[in-house]
Image 1 (cartoon, rainbow, N blue to C red):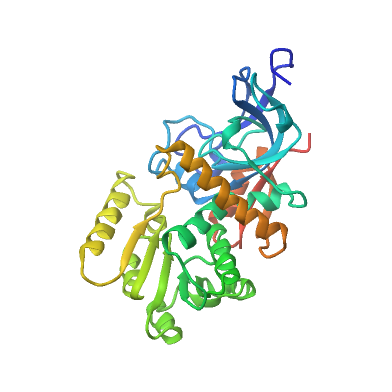
Image 2: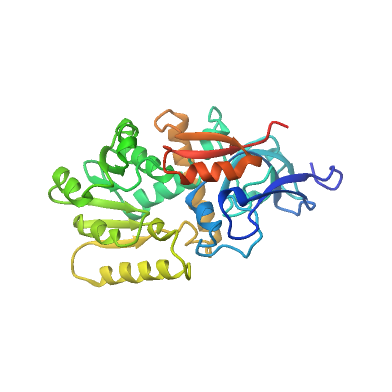
Length: 349
């Protein structure tokens, strides 16, 4: 139905008021505007806590908006209303959306063209673990590194949200995976099908003991000085996929500087005659070609969802926490003690 006759919706939102500790996020309420043509109102069933929100609350995410704002990189929910001239059959469907900000809200207004169907039989919480994580992992593996069965890859943070998804997708593709994690998470990493390596030890030596000739790809969200070891561990023809700078998350100063330094280093390595390549993955890189961007997101996340619906991928849900307790969810996600993704769910009321 159109919002022309609908009762206005007041959404419960989580607001980042500025640079705060996890318990400094605020709970707010906002009356949503009427839907415009091409828009849909989605009632959130699950949203996730990713590294992006952890950086945003520090004011260090590369292109975050000015404070205050509502974070939330993605969401899964049911369409409850559509705007004028918008497909009415969307109402009642479970969908996923990549939002970048705004997902930590009980209701979100989303462009209908950005909605991706969630298969029947896949719960909202399970689907949520595969939205930003699944798109990121799938595109790095298949569109950039172009992994093949029989190859060996190294995944840093293999117990995390993106890391655990990378491991599973690689194993489905017949790839051997070495995964770094803390010693206490080694069992969880092994259960995913990877060979665990203690990140607190000599990682290059441990990896070389398993893959003496090097690995075919490294997936590194850490950045910092360790990125040099990641590049050196590549076999000839190998690919380094960098997708974050977690090592510098608490550094003071310009939040863009670590990213720019990383870009420069990756570009330099690509100029060397070493038969190895290095890339920085940005999920939004193709947004200027919006039609192609949407087509690839729908295809890639659709492929991930189908694998999950068939039971070939398993959702790694670290915890389910009510939306109004997002501060507690942030603290848990940042603790380094969990495997998989912390998921926000609607409050009981």
